[in-house]
Length: 198
Ligand code: IMP
Image 1 (cartoon, rainbow, N blue to C red):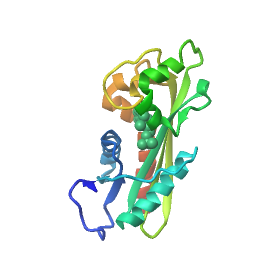
Image 2: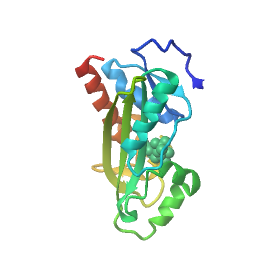
Image 3: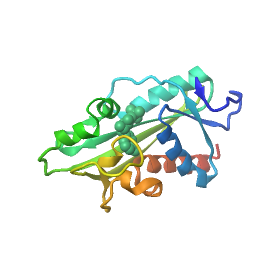
Image 4: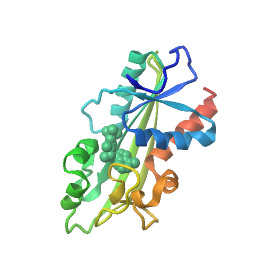
């Protein structure tokens, strides 16, 4: 396990975000900060079950990580669902990005006029005793005709959120935090934590 300095597993108020994607961690941190909720990075591998349901994937990984590390953890699973490709790459987004990449996805969309797509983030909060809570966020938009912008990660250079003309990669952090699926899911988590006073 890598990541920030460890604290005792008995520190029940610390929320550990299990991810190896530092962009996701920074986005989550920026969203939770205004609510006064602090998270910490647990830079550890997580188990990813074969499923087309992002919520199930996140929940399984969170419950397993909570037991393994004996602490309350957050796991997020996300993906890009393209309408003209019947929802592909969806749960396989990470693999598709690592293999054919942004340019490969644009090639699959060559001459395609139907360019609607959405990003979804499913978030699971799990305790070592086995309880869990899920939150999700979705942002609708379109796939651009070419890659634009150099901020963010993954498919940010080709996703234009509805109501905008810029890709996530052109818009930068404030823009992303305003519209993104991840920000929506983490805001739901924040409101739930405040409501339940955990
Ligand atoms: P996973 O949640 O680690 O399985 O990875 C999800 C994959 O979906 C990432 O590797 C990206 O390729 C893509 N993805 C998810 N969220 C975003 C986002 O906010 N911007 C760009 N790409 C994303």
